[in-house]
Image (spheres, rainbow, N blue to C red):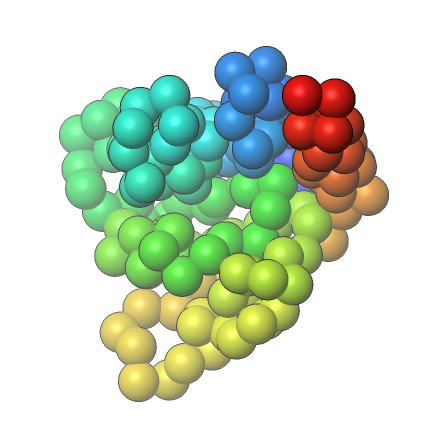
Length: 154
């Protein structure tokens, strides 16, 4: 499978989040061409500020692989990771992160800062951005536009 195929799987997870009225971000963890973890944003539904898509996918992969470390795994996420998720990615030893849309407000894989390039940190994942960026970004912008319309009508 190609990066685009795995990003489409992450987009499926993002759509699940949107259907739950969560910010539509989704993620999958891949090992040797197979999806071993899936996650979508759930902080509202779980009352858990750490329940971002990336963290949920890492938890799922860790459970499935019976290991808190995920060496050799790749993470595909529809939105550039935030600082919290990037820390979890580093601690899990993910080898590569592929994201869709950039996040100019909280993204730390190059937009606001680049934590993955910080040489003083212990682990460095390879980063690739912009995979299906338009589709990932459209899902997010459509969600927030609908939310603003609902607020105006309320």
